[in-house]
Amino acid sequence: MDHSMWIEVERSRKRMHEILDQKFDNFILHTACGDLAEYLDKDTYAKPLLAPARMFKGAKPTAVILPEKGKVVAATWQRVVLTILLDCDSDPVKHERLMTLRSRVAGDFRWLLSDKSKGLRAPLRINEGLYFEGKFDTEALLRNLTKKILEPVGYDYSGIAVLLRNV
Image 1 (tube, rainbow, N blue to C red):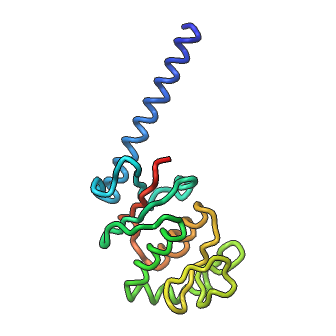
Image 2 (image 1 turned 120 degrees about the horizontal axis):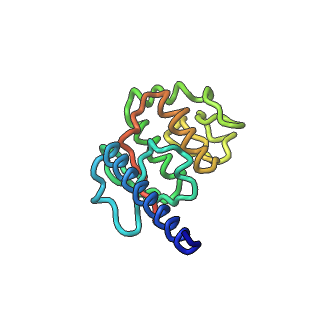
Image 3 (image 1 turned 90 degrees about the vertical axis):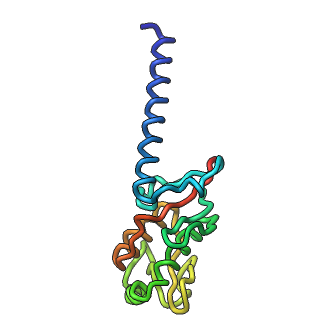
């Protein structure tokens, strides 16, 4: 095999991996969140919130798709997180659980949930007396949201998808 043929085989291998990855991504998204075709266009794609937080790094959000409420515009990661927390807090049982977690769940240097905005670097107001620390990079923000807040309060985020901008 000469060099040019080897390069072509490697290009083909790379393209086949990309196609296979895209097929699996679509399968996972459809299985977790259902048919999202009505929300997608040539400029956007979706990822389920169930995906590992690292997979969202570098992506630019445009909206959150909530199972009961549909599409909610959210152009920043902080807005994505706040939208999900507001949905979680709208359930009275989850609200009480969130209130119980205030000043009990730590981030790296501060509480993730607090009863006041003072002391938080980027407070996201969920309601009066409930604030979330939003000063994290994308991966840490989503990991803190899902693993340290949503899972402990029993909020099912398996059907949530984030719409992302094609770059």
